[in-house]
Structure formats: structure tokens, C-alpha cells
Length: 65
Image 1 (cartoon, rainbow, N blue to C red):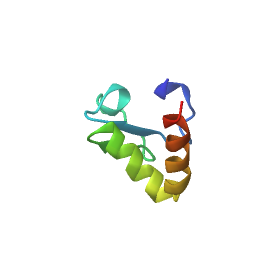
Image 2 (image 1 turned 180 degrees about the vertical axis):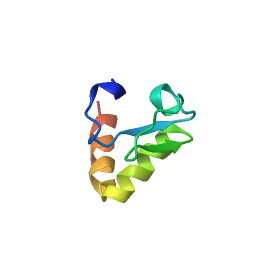
Image 3 (image 1 turned 60 degrees about the vertical axis):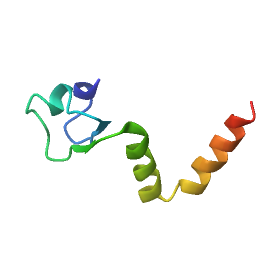
Image 4 (image 1 turned 120 degrees about the vertical axis):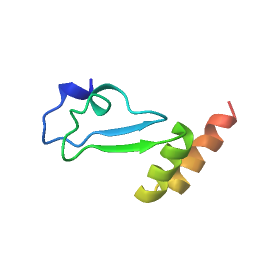
């Protein structure tokens, strides 16, 4: 799927290791890789986007089910 988007589209990989085109050395100038624990990487992204409160609300609603 990562290769299915145009070259002008930024791609983000959040994973413990580089995989796919990120590992094959065919990265694009606008690719971003956040290596480490996936949950930590997603939390970091959410904080950078200013969505922490929304994520916490969604997680609280999901925990009620």
C-alpha cells in the first residue's frame, strides 16, 4: 500500500523496524519514520497534532463497552 500513493504524498511509518520501501532504501524526500513502540509513536503523533484530549475521550468511551 505504501507504494500505491503518488510521490507527492507524504508517508508515515510508525513501527519498531523499517519495513517495505522504508527498509529497501527507496524512501522519498517526504517520508517520515518513527521507530519504536507503536503505541508510543501514535501517542507522540496525537500530541504533536493537538489531539490528546480527543483521543483520551474516545478511549474512555471505548472502555465503557
